[in-house]
Image (tube, rainbow, N blue to C red; front, side):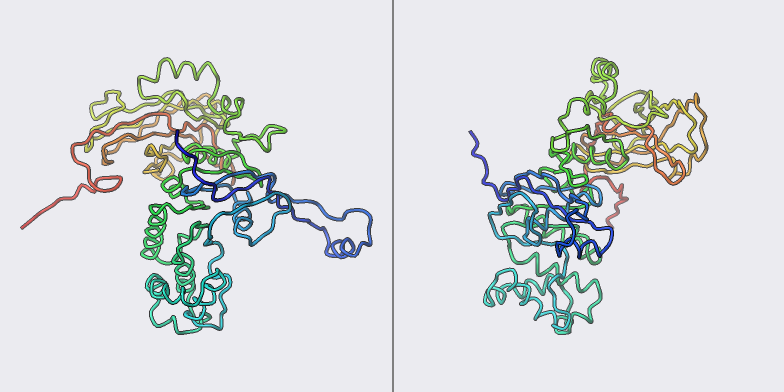
Amino acid sequence: MEQEKPVAISVRGVEKIYKLYDKSSDRVREALGLTRKARHKKHYALNGIDMEIYQGECVGIIGTNGSGKSTILKIITGVLSPSRGEVEVNGRISALLELGAGFNMEYNGIENVYLNGMMIGFSEKEIDEKLQDILDFADIGEYVYQPVKTYSSGMFVRLAFAVAINIEPEILIVDEALSVGDVFFQAKCYHKFEEFKEMGKTIVFVSHDLSSISKYCDRVVLLNKGVKLGEGSPKEMIDTYKRVLVGQYEIPDGAEHTNLLHDKDIREKAAGKAQEKKAVEENGAKQGINPELLEYGSKKARIEEYGLTDCNGVKTTAVIKGQEYTIRMKAVFTEDCPAPIFAFTIKNIKGTEITGTNTMVEKAFLEPVKAGEVKEITFTQHMNLQGGEYLLSLGVTGYEGDDFTVYHRLYDVLNMTVISDKDTVGFYDPESAVQVL
């Protein structure tokens, strides 16, 4: 029996409550005890959060703006105190939260390295040993001897990141901090991040970059309006998060503190009618159709048919690399739609979006559609992905005024196998014309 890993971070029943006042005078009157009636409203930035992160795990936290992601990180790192609940941390933390917080603008770069290092808990001798690595990573040249108030924003974050990333912590907390500086520095940041993961460090990672979440994280926690909606694999949580983004994820009354990913009613609703699901399972599984597909939308339009055809027009789920293939779908409209957008996305089995397009981007269809109309859409292109297994998602969306609306989405509806006798590096083949003279 495999021994369970030790817990690095334990969060139990954490709440963070802020008092909101209509007027500043109400705050003063309440503070001085001049009123018996409460003059504030309670705002729950976090409401009953429970989670455990084990040593060596990379856990992502995702959610919309205002969901409490940064607040929970600040509580874990001790920047904020919880209103209720307990947090236990086992290991030395380095936090990439607000880069440069604690820098003295009058000090030069070297002085700020020592200032920040000592604030984290390092001795002067320990910082001496790490100084060259920090300076090499920041790579801002002679500017390290100038006051940081003279730095450009790029130089400032490079130095701040270099200090935080080179202290060799046991636990790394990252809040939207990997995309700093120019593209070359970003690549260096991600390389360092991968080094930490390979070394078995515990990592808590907050980002809106879902591809990075999918690539690096072993497990993902989804927050929304201070409540934990669920936790699970990156693919499951990212798909659920996308439903939250377009208002297609309903929280039943009294279920604020449950893991809604496993709520039976919501899962059945997301998958569509039970009869349709059964039909997919019985008739589609052998054709590469996902029996557990995630489906949602307002249903002003419905994708009734879909599939792949090869270069000869034959239905298939296997495409030979280098050949032409076509993605097909038929949409039936039950209501008028001002300008529907038809789209597809291809992901790998880890959930990373590899490629995709839509009719608006391609300027292929920008017309209103009436109720009762049927549209057949085809996307034809050459297959230059590497050999392997992929998942195809389809959608019909649109803008009604300024509001983005999902009419019908089918996530991971089809499995697509790419057959190849030559795989290059990365996701796709650049189809290079090589010449050696």
